[in-house]
Image (cartoon, rainbow, N blue to C red; front, side, top):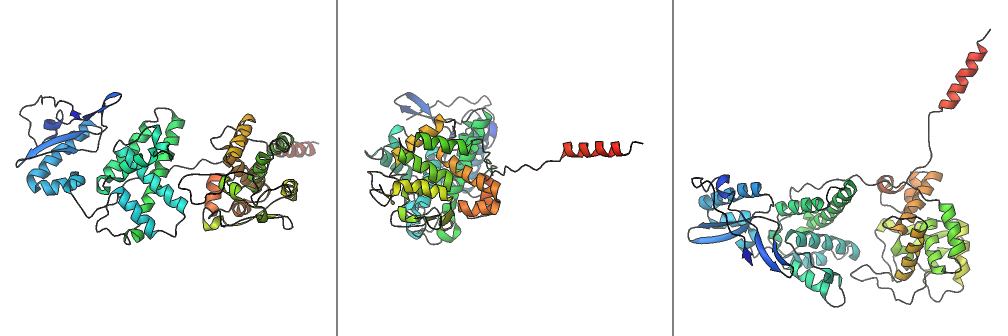
Amino acid sequence: MKDQPIRPNPSAKASKFSREYWQERVFRPIYATEDGATAVPEFYAQVQHAGRREKIGLSTNSREEAARRAARLFQTVRAKGWDRALKEFAPDKAGNINCPTVGQFLSAFEEVAADAAPRTLRGYATSLRWLAGRAFGIRGDESRFDYRSGGYEKWRQRIDRIRLEKLTPRRVENTLARFVAEAGQNPLAQQKARRSAASMARQARALFSKKLLRKLPFSEIPNPFAGVPIEGVRPVRYVGTLNATSLLQAGRDELAGADPEAYKALLLALGAGLRKREIDSLTWPQIDAEQNVVRIETGEHFRTKTKDSEGAVYVDPGLIAELDRYREKATNLFVLESKLPPRPESPVAYYRAEKTFDRLTAWLRSKGLLADKPLHTLRKEFGSLINASADIYTASRQLRHSTIATTAAYYADNRRRVTVPVAAMLQHSKLDAEKMKP
């Protein structure tokens, strides 16, 4: 690694305790890469005192702010000594052996939170690693998506070696801000980036519950999110634009015979509002033809998203009749046929019927459904239709949300229009006027 040369300070008389002194002395270290030389995002300062010299990151990419922090760093070193200064500005250099690495923290957390849904824990862990990786420039290349040949494992190990104390609240806040800034000036891209950053931060922050931290075998666990403002982005309400009737009719005409698996998935998503994983793991015994009910429950091959996700979904007899056309030809318990076995404990997203979902997604896009997740849009449309024909409470029960607030905030688009009857009022006024004529 080579450092950028420190440019001479134009103000030779400036005090080391002042921002002006450090303005031109802070620098970005440069690393040699395959593509050439790359500078790290944050500024550093090199401080010497009492026969010791340290190069310390200032957790900002603003030269002005870096100069101010460097001045405070030097003041702390001179007034309180290296140990106090390093603990405040560079905890990793202070050598706190009582604080775990990211990997040690996550391993211990998994043990004390063994009752939590594995998928939920994976989401929290992924979010923390995402933040830590971006904070320290460990983004990796395409190999980090290689789960078979070890590319993902190598990328994860690099992040897991980071000491948790290095992931300071200031560094977390700067990382989130940089992620949003990378979206550029496009308002939609910025909105999406803010939502992603907030979602990642909220999930990672959930790991630092005081109740669970007390159970961990570490004497010191700094909270990287202490005082970090996490933007509360207003959720995007679903506004239905598809014609569900036309889509179902097209599905029956084009898929029922040619691609029955895709047709069954379409029926379960739009007609029963099931999630992708619920469709993938649904078995024939869960479909009650007498009661016209599809039961979602934790079983040998499937664990529901939450306890509230379990329950009965009331469906139209016509949906049951359509599915019953394929029940006798089933080769196993699962509604969707697939040669792949179920893997309920898979550490990554896995679907038995992935190829079926891919075909259905392509078909939906050909029908003009261009959302990022067309299959989930069908579930939203299901909730919207229930809300329009009944009410928000019924939609919430059918969608199996934990609270009605979730339904109201994200999914149900009430299409019933209530307007001021201007035409009727004007007509009534006209009739009154005619009656008053002599």
